[in-house]
Every structure is written in C-alpha cells, then in structure tokens.
Amino acid sequence: TDGFIGDRLTVNWQYAPTLDVRARRYRFRILNGSVSRFLALGMVKECLGNTCEMPGPKGSGKSYQRIPFHMVANDGNLMEHTVPFDGSMDLDGDGNFVEHNAVLPAQGIAERYDIVVDFAKNGVKAGDKLFLMNTMHHDTGILAKIRIPLADILSEKYKPVLKTNPDGTQQWDAGDPTVGKIMQLNVKAYAGVDQSMDPTQYEPAHAGKPIGKTMIPLWLDRTNPADMATLTNAIHRDFDFGRFAGTDAAPWTIKTDGGIAYNMDPRRLSAGNQLANGPTDAGSTGAGTLQVWKLTSGGGWSHPVHVHFEEGIVLARNGLPPPEWEKWARKDVYRIGGGEDNSLSIEFAIHFREFAGTYMEHCHNTQHEDNSMLLRWDIEFPGQFQVMATPMPTWDGVEYAPSVGIPTFRTGDGLGFSGTP
Image (cartoon, rainbow, N blue to C red; front, side, top):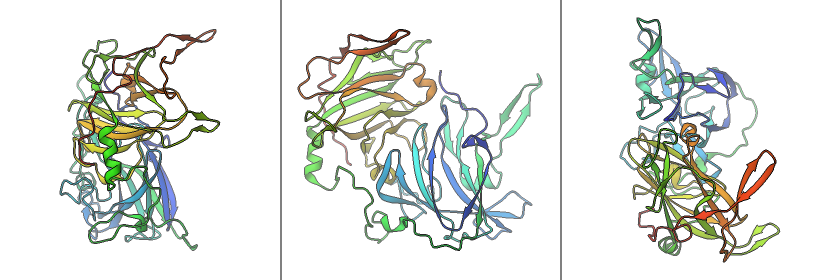
C-alpha cells in the first residue's frame, strides 16, 4: 500500500534500448509511467581517454561530458519561456548552478517533461555516443529518494551489487539498480537544414541576457499588480495528503480545508467551483473563475497529486517563489512531501472556464491511488444550488446516487494567497 518500485527501468517498455539520432535538434516527451518510482534524468556524452569532465570506471579508458538541453513543456503544454539546463541559471534559487546542469528535476509519477536536445552543438558530433541516465535513488517504495551525482555513477563510486543471501534469495546492495544508464543514443550524420525552433531564443532573462521571445503566454502575469491582487481575493482551498485517519485496508486520506480526513467516496463533494458564465455550444464564455489551491503533505511521504481537467500556474513552494521549470509552466501534477525538488506545500492558481461536471484529484503514486487517496470536485453552473448526483456504475448500467458536500465545499478555507510568486 506504500509504493512498489521494481528493479528494472524501461524506456518505451524496452530495457536499455538504443536510438539512432541525426546531428540536429530533437524534442523528447518524457512521461514518468512508473507505479511509485520518482525519476531524475540526465544526459552525458562518452569520451575516449580522460578528455572530458567526469572520469569513467578505473581502467575503462573512458570519461564523460554533460550534455545540456532545454525544457520546453511541462505536463500539458508549451511553457511561456524555455528553461536551459546548462548551468547558466540557478534554477531553484538555492545557489547551486551545477545540480541541474544536464540533469532534470525530480519527476513524479505521471509528470511530463518535454526537452529539446541539440545533437549538433555542445561538442556533440556524428559518431558520438550519448546516454540518458537516471540519478534518483530509492531504498524502497516508502521514503528515501536521493539524487546521486552524475560523477559518482559514471566512475562507479556508486555501484549496486546483486547479493545472494545464505538462504539462496537475492537482493540488491550498495545502491539502486535503476540508477545509471537507461538509454543509449548514437549520433549519425545529418546533411539537411535544421528548421526546428531554437530554444535558446525563448529563454527567460538571466546572466545579463535579456528576456527572450515568448512561446505561449501564461494567463496570469506575476509582474502585473492587478493580477496579483486577484489572488488575495480568490477562494482559497487547502488539501492535506497523508495517513491522518487511515486504516490498514484504506491507509491514505485527504483532509480538505482543515476538516475531517477522508478516504475516497464518490458521493462526497469536497469542492464545488462555479463557472462565471453560463454554457454555450462550445463550453462557457469568459475567463472563468479564479481560485488558489494549496496542497500539503508531511515531510516523510511524497505525493504527485494529479488534478484532472484544469491546469494551474504554480505560485509558491513553502511560501517561496517556484523554480524556473514551474514558474513558466502550466501544471496538472504537483509534487509535495519529502525528497529532492519537493516541498511540504505548493500553491497554484487555477481557473474554471467550461464544461460543468464531476472531476477527480488524487495521488498518482498508483499504490496510494488504488488505496483510496482520491477526492471528488465539481465544476458547477453559475448560481447552482443543488449538488450534482453521483453516477454509480452497475452491471445493468449507470445509476445515480445523492451527493453530499462537505461544509466548505463552496466557500473554501477562508484564507487568501499570501506567498511570493
């Protein structure tokens, strides 16, 4: 019920595959499709001799070089600006420029990162061999998730070993067997003209470089005082994920607006969010209604929370500005809890524009989801008073049961956003 991680990491269902690429730009869409495992992927080039930054295993005659890339999309859509993972920016504001040089942030289950890699720049040429690597170490599916430095993996300072116990059973020791190379890329010659988008032209301002062009603007401008003022007046909701009232049969619960912690019941409505305008043939008109949602969790557990249907804009993590890869993004999976690149709380702005109906919010660690860590929220019509009935599938078709809203399902917790976006 806590988490299942396995000991083999696959790419497109294949173990340790290879991919031939031309010496030009490629866009990769990376989905973490694990049951419970978090990832942190990086990319390196193999060099002969000790000519590159990071030595290989002793006596191997190999070394390795980081290969930078740009994040261009996060979860559902293109971002407002591309984010360079090349060491030129302190992406999460902690003073460390190296930790995300050629290494993506932690990626929870169901999160999507789109990156553009240029196989004709940064010293990469036809004939080179590159590797996509996982750097995120798990002890079990329960708690510890630690990023291992690329240099330690490549030198085999960090090297898991499969041990045979006296009773004949086997287990991994001194590391996580999924940490290391997971995919090989072979660079081939390219005689054409690369006409794809150059991500370097769309970067945010940094290191004396002016702000670049915009891809798709966010619907909320953090530099606009009027936009920020709307956040303090918006309905504010709090969802706390944990084990507050769990049982062995249904251990995982969600507490809404400081109330009672519940397991999933589809007849219970935790949030009713009303549209600003009535429906048209193409949905609702107008910009929709704005709310601020806060997700929280204790430091021990990690939960990648998936909010269905609507994408939000991350405002703050633990009350502080979000990292660059979330600052410019539209998200629908939000990591909270302990571990790398996580925080105990995250706040995001979300607006409801069209298609009234019943939707879900849940932890996407599949073990948690399958053990009741879900809740229902609705998009209601303007001025709606009666809650929507609950569709209940049966062998003879769908029947409808009465629904009941928790006390705060239309009002929220009475607080407003007070962080620093």
